Image (cartoon, rainbow, N blue to C red; front, side, top):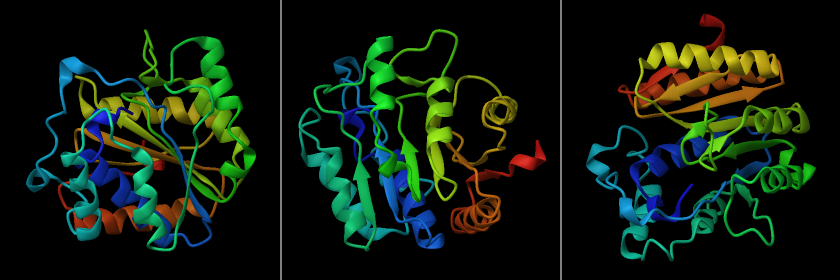
Length: 241
């Protein structure tokens, strides 16, 4: 995640979906945000995803739209992603943001990566929607600080309790979307023994994993309802691979 993109339409999709899940699964006590914050890229400016008229999801959440639009008036280097706490707390949800002391930005140095994930307190992985926000998504052949490694996914999945949900941000590469999603879903199943549920706007997708046998059906119901509100989205049920 980079500060320069805060408040764009991808954030609208992200936070609105998280709010919808929290509203639908009341056993979740909060939302744990693992930002994997990286340095801004001056070559890419402020991003080109700020026209909310082009958003495919989240537009019914007027309060969230207004909250995110405020980022447009703030210098990209000064944007504070912790401001999102105000939106969730105003709706009675606890949001716990993981900020490892001493490391301002997430890096690709192995020791730094290992420490980042190992230092996440178990309390943040208890009855929580655990959201991980890498710049690009899951690991590739030549992964960088923009990617979440499978070992890190396994670490989080094994440490979180059975009443938690692991949610992962993923951008689409330049390949057939259905083939890509099927491959990633199978890789995640091999890693965790759990088939992910996903929802996508054909630019980004969110993978959802849980250990609790009762939660997938609840998630399916919520995701189906969310897609009904935003018909241009695509949803996927893991056992249909």
